[in-house]
Image (cartoon, rainbow, N blue to C red; front, side, top):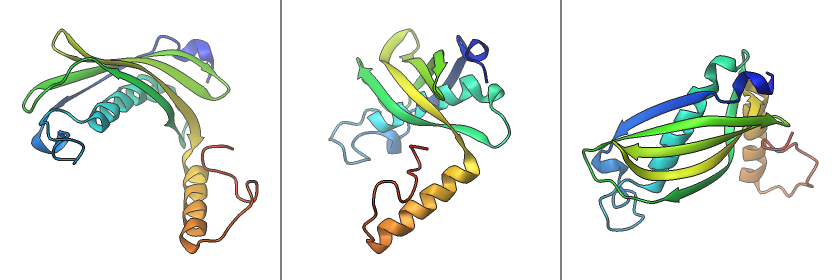
Length: 150
């Protein structure tokens, strides 16, 4: 994929806040407002939607960095919309500018970085790392390639 193909690509996603999407339901605090992890999931979905048509077979992206500033809260029953605009591609990393709105009201803004990965090899690395960790085997840094650094 070439940077000029994805720069400016826009993706959108939407959700209606349900009781299980709230901070209180997730044990974060005692407020029945959308949880931060739900906002991040909505944003990640918008990022994926922006570039899905540009991915090669077997390729996907994963979030490696997120910076979100939350400027408003939203309660149960309301719909929110996320938009993501691709700012660039360099060294296998995509940068996105993101926003979440409830109608015209801004709820959150941020920057997201996503990395290209090949699905099969990524999941093989995850499985290997998980098995090694489960067995409690100490490993040297370069003995198994990290699923995020290859």
